[in-house]
Amino acid sequence: MTNAHRRDAALDIARGLIMVLMALDHTRMYFSSATFDPVTIGQTTPAYFATRWVTHLCAPGFFFLAGLGASLAERAGMSGRLSSFWLASCGLWLLALEFTLIAFAWSFTLRWSWIGVIASLGASMICLAALRWAPKAALGAAALLVIVLHNAFPVSEWISSAWLSALAYGGGVAEMSFGDRIMLFPIAPWLAVMVAGYAFGAWLTPGGRASPTRFAAIGAVLCVAFVSLRYMGFGEPAMGGSREYASASDTIMSFFNVEKYPPSLQYLCATLGVLFLLIAAFGRLHQRAADAAKSRFEPLLSFGRVPFFFYLLHLYVIHGLALLVAWALGWPTHYLFWRDVGPNLTPPDGYGLSLWGVYGVLALVLAILYPLCAAFAALKARSNAFWLKYF
Image 1: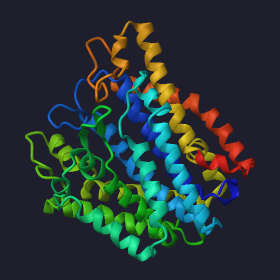
Image 2: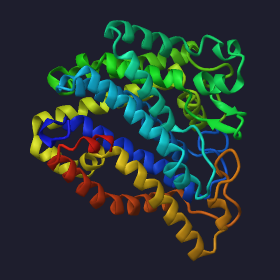
Image 3: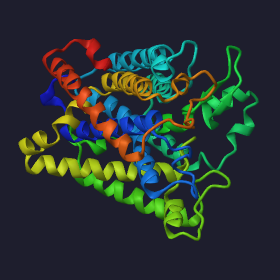
Image 4: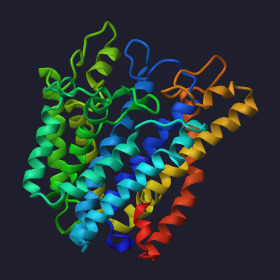
């Protein structure tokens, strides 16, 4: 899957868009002057809420497309043993980097880490390496069962170990022998999303290409399911769901304010539904005018062909720029060094930019990353070196 002519442009564009949205979220974290959570109704604004909401597409996209990518790799000729080796070794690689280079990029301090998206991706890949030997129909059914019902069962109450419960199912802060850690992405619900991508990958990508018709159909079904579930009140944690407010904008935001930590059924229906519709749109556009589409989406294609390379670089670029700007403008720099269990998300007085300033910094970040990612993507296209698959 390393040669450019064997890649699906629609999926690469979708991956690239996911990376840009992720960079937007992390630029907001390090540069925003807002002292409120962008999804706290009553404090946030529509612009902040929308900025945060669109970045919800990232994590489901990471996990689903990782599973889909494993399915594509198998059908491109990767043997069963090699596929399991690749998944397991990639998972171990991600886990190792999560607690070293990535942890330092987040915090700019030593001995700080959390169980973030990369760690959960790595653990899920290791699990998929073992699960892929099961029949795909059984895997698909099990994945859907977990996705649909995981909010309905108090599994966390059935697990006696608090840290294991947080790691596997519920998320939160876990007290561990080497220090407390935030479990942002519990494994079970996110593994289910990856397994779904793997199990249904062949149906969604016949001939190794994303089917716009099938992605559009499933995307529409998921969006309708989200609206229906929202009105029914099923598929969110206890006390979740929408509310009516005096302000119409607050009521609308409340309707779309779904729970990500851990991912609720409504959250997954909304985000995967939108993502699938985007993939369908990219696929149709590419079918109609392949050359024009590639030219128009070249930056997203480059980002999407080297997603992990982008991930590693973007954290250092964003955090490094924040430290440089803070030093130059006299902002409190201690805010950028994380030492507590969680990240620093409430900026001190005199720190940060407006939301539109955040978008300006994002444009600079992408301008820095694009030539680097384009060069690395070109290297991947020229080479069949196996190690390049890990980026």
